[in-house]
Length: 333
Image (cartoon, rainbow, N blue to C red; front, side, top):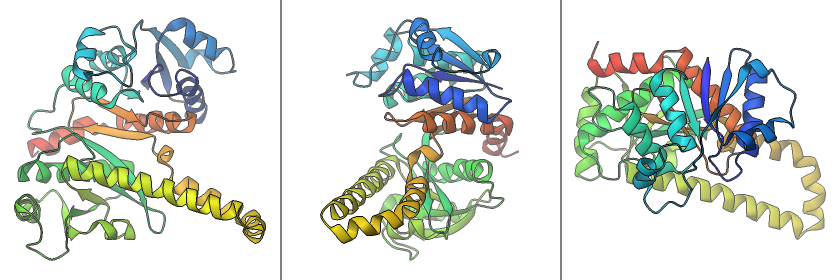
């Protein structure tokens, strides 16, 4: 299974993408990674490692789409030989089964839509992400930022797509789906959520749990949270900010107290466990849902572990013929 990796995308490229590729092929012997980017820079990084040279390939790309491009769409169209464009082109041509990039989000979404196209019947592609929850549980959130303005039928279809996603990635036979709202009672919310609630109750593709408040998202009672991209992106960034804030509070309290420092020594295993469960690197990235190909957006500050896991996730979706299965569900087959 070949996975295309944008080796020039992200804050720490090509160091971390290349290292992540090496880790991925060592963990899964069936994977071959195509490193896409400036060939000489990639070769220089590869010299640091001992690896199976039959399972790392290089596809030269002479341009880079910057993280701070003023117009992502213009960058995609003008920089045709960018590592991002070339990586997605490999998926489109069938030379790779999935693409992973930590580059500019807007550019990757644009390039993915232009090259891979929507699955027939998909109203709007969306961004899917995963959160840790109570009791070693995880939840899928859709949309995490692709569609700020939504119609009720979009949310209804998001639920169907995220339901299939959870089946594959989280290995849940019948995911429980919740609609993000300001209250749990029927009839709560604005016009969008009220109309979407009615559609979700009638959606035969899912097991609809009902409305779910944001504070209840992480209690382990549901597997999929559906919302519009505007709200979903706020939830995502609030969760990230809260985790960072709590980390800073704990760190400062430990620094300011002798007893806290002593106690912290005994708490090291606990801190490591919490960090692992809450880290975005555990699943590596967000899938652009609804396209005719697997395109995964890794976080801009991804380390090698995040790239490794994004590659493994891309491979898992490819092995499970996720695009084909989703296409059948969208068509109602």
